[in-house]
Each structure stands twice: as structure tokens, then as C-alpha cells.
Image: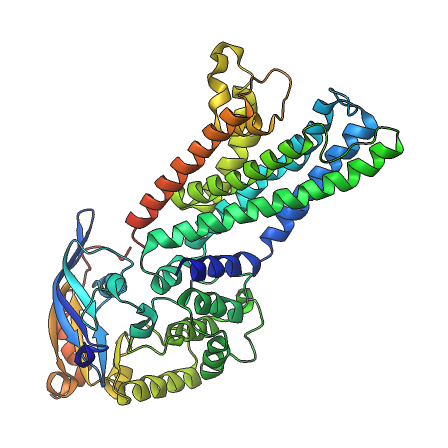
Length: 245
Length: 250
């Protein structure tokens, strides 16, 4: 599956929570060497889609694959996909470094990977402090550091810039751009459209659980008004069918 | 893979402090019980074999509920602190992760029991010897009771981990365990109208295993109690594994 390494393929993906259809027959692909921006209003189903991609939520229909396999069937998932779903998911009394070392052990990576990703994410000085004392931006960096442990072929990120300061946002932009340039896949959701216009080669736009548009950024946002105008007209009448779980 | 997962679970357990506080509480109870039993009074008296057994069964065996709470907090805490996502991203197959947790808390429980048995022996043996009742660990069937205590506390660890996995809420699981083990079960087990049925309740079966006898409570024989308590632990472990495998991480 060498040619498919890091390729994300979503086809016919559907998830219902009670009577609310959060994701409804969604299909798109995100390929290596490209940053793909994943857009949609609040409640569009982006987070549920990313959680299905990561094997945390079971789809009712369709499938989502990374490197040709569903997440739970990947031989070493941490090497195929690094996933950031929220700037949370840390025990408050555990240090950032210990948090990372737990997952080094679980995945069979050498413990020094924890120090390497702390350094790469600008947390070297904070690593031995308990997460309870971290700012939102530091938690976001620690979540990203966790995703980077396995040096994965694809990065899947849900609003990774949330909580970062301007310096952090510039740093993240550089990191994602370099990641895609090195021939790997980056799929990230965002509400900050000017940021997406700077970074993404391709965009996928969701609304009310369905795909409304996907394709190269230049093609979609090339006209007057740019990405924002296109986004607002595609997602007009934006009362979501249900709030996110 | 299981070795890796168990090592990761131990790393989780040891990188926060809860295990230490609950161990200190267990040790304090085990030592305190010995002091009270010897210095104040106890029925049966400590010169008898039954009295010596109680030092270990009730003293060191008191670590059981605390081992269950440690396990429940560790397993259900993965949902409360939202670390479950990272755990299942690292290992998407959930049954082996839960199996690793069950093994981890089985071993942690055995460790608690050993530490508590050691402190019970350290308090009781020199003191009793000084009072002219030399007691040997190997004599009077004391070793069998120690073995039963280790099995019992280890099974409490499995029970707590299984319940935490089944319920998935840290507060509800820990509060439920405290209420059940320290309030509900002691009351129910003294209702004589229920007959011998109460001996099959999990905590009472554990008392049967170690023969931690209390006035007015019917106990099973050690081997029966051990089997019944092991069955409770196995059922909760299986139910917890099934629940975690089905639960969406939202």
C-alpha cells in the first residue's frame, strides 16, 4: 500500500445520534503532499467525521480509511495518523512529559520521542510541570505533540489553532506547511478562513452533515470575494439541525 | 503487545499520586486494626488462631475496597479526563486495552495486600512475642490466610476496574463502590430473613475467602467464597470490556 500511505478516503460516511443525522453520506479524499482545509459552520458534522476517521465513533454506514485501511485495522496506527481532536484529554495531575511517555510505552516508541516532540512543540521548559497549570495554548501544543509521537504519514486536526497566540499560529502554519511539503497528508478543520486561504491546497466544505463543495482552493475561492464569500453562500441558512455531541 | 499495554497502564497509574494516598490509607487501617486488636481487646482474642487470622483478614484485607476504588478511578477516570481518546488512538483495539487494565489493577491489588500484610506482621508479631504469645507467620494456618488476603485484594482490583469500565463515570463508580461496600452490604448482610443468600454478595464472598468474620454475618467457606468472588470479578470484567468496546468516544 506504499502509494496510498497517508491518503485519507471518506466514502458514504453516515452517523446518526438519536433522530439527528450528524453526518449524512459524506465522501471526500485528502491526499499526501497537500494541506486540506475541512470547513463548515458549527454543528456541520466536522468533529463527528474526524472522530469516525480516528475510530473513536462507529459510523452507521460508509467508511473512512487512512492508507487504505480503517483506523482500527492499521498495523501501527500512530505511524499512519496523528490525531488532535481537542486541546483536552490530559490528566491534570500528570506532567506533559509523563503524558507523552505513557503513549510512547503503549505504542512501543523509545521514551526519548517524548522529549523530541516536547522540543518540537515549544514545550521543553514546561514538560515537567503538571498539565493543570498549562494555558489553553500549551494544551493545544501538547495535543499536537502527542499526535507527532509516531511521526505519522497523515495529520488529522480539529481546530488546532484554537487557543494559540499569534506566534503560536505562525508556528503551527509553518509546521503544517512543512509537513505537507515532505509528502505527507494534512487534514484540518478551521473556522479561520483567511488562515485556510494561506495554507490549504484543497478545501472540503460541509453543511448540515453533507458535503457541499470540495476541490482545489484556487478553483473554489478564485472568484470575487474569496473563500469567505463562497463559504457564506454555500452555508446560508445556517441553523444547524442539531448541536454537536 | 500485552506487555507494552500493561507497562503503559502502570506508567499511567504511577505518574499520578492516587495510588500512594490509597496505599497509605490501607497501611494505616492495617496497622491501626492490629494496634486496637492487641492493645484494647478483640473477640476472638489474639492468643487464639482465629484471633491471629483476623489481624490479617480484617486488617490487611481492608485494602480490598481501596484497591477497588483505585482501579475504578483509574479506568473510569479515562473518560472523566478525556484521555480515553488518546488511549484508543494509540491502541484502537479496545479489548486488549481493558485486559491490560484488569491485569494492572490485579497486580496493584496484590501489591497493596502484600504491603498491608507486611505492616500487620511488623506491628503484631514483635508485640505479641513481647507479651509472651510468640506467633509465627508459618504457624496456625496464618500463611493460608495471607494467601487468601492477597487473592481477595487482587480480585477487588479486578472488580473495581470492571465496574469502572462498565459505568464509564469516575464519580458515580467511586461513590457507588463506597456506598455499596461500606453502607449497603454491611446492612443487607445482617438481615437474617434473607438467609444464606447474602453470603454470595461480592464483598461478603470476599470475607468468606479470607474468613474475615463479623458478628451476625454468614460467610461461605474460603474456597466457596473465593470462587464466588472470582465469578463476580469475571462477570464485571467481561461486562466492562463489552461496554467499552461499544461506547463511542465523543
